[in-house]
Image 1 (spheres, rainbow, N blue to C red):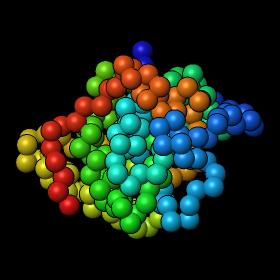
Image 2: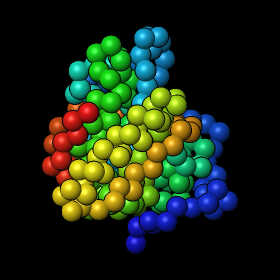
Image 3: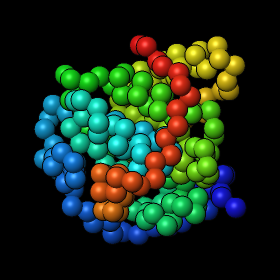
Image 4: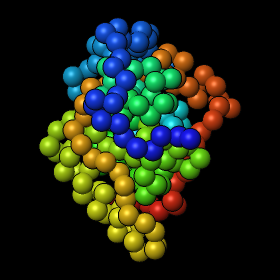
Length: 207
């Protein structure tokens, strides 16, 4: 049985002092995603189900400099994939998006986020069930927070017009982001026939 209840900080797995070691080089673009990032770049973090397909969604967008997958919004320090899958870390599977705001806006990334998954499903996306598959937007500034909340209202209007449910997406300031293991980074570029669970609602957000 998959855990669909968030643990408390006291219940969560403790974790460890050592971070997961990764190359930090994007398999597709060749850009670094953990150091020497150009100052003009901005960051965004999204959770929309299994992070393999979610990451590919964003690296294909023009203006995105690099992407990386990881764990955030939970309690466990330096978690690993097996721990996150237990549901006892509180972490979500998320995508870090590093983008050039002169080419692609944060609002455009938000639109891609809403359109690529069903944000009404709670602790799941399709057959992927568990707290690590919840819908989430994790912001780096008050501006991102305001834009995320506005986009949620707009997309809820579209869902309501189609007789669909209420959005369960959590929107909060980004907490510690922990990079996932190397084999998860750009997984669908390394494994083109790998699993992708992204399924949108068919609705389009015109901001």
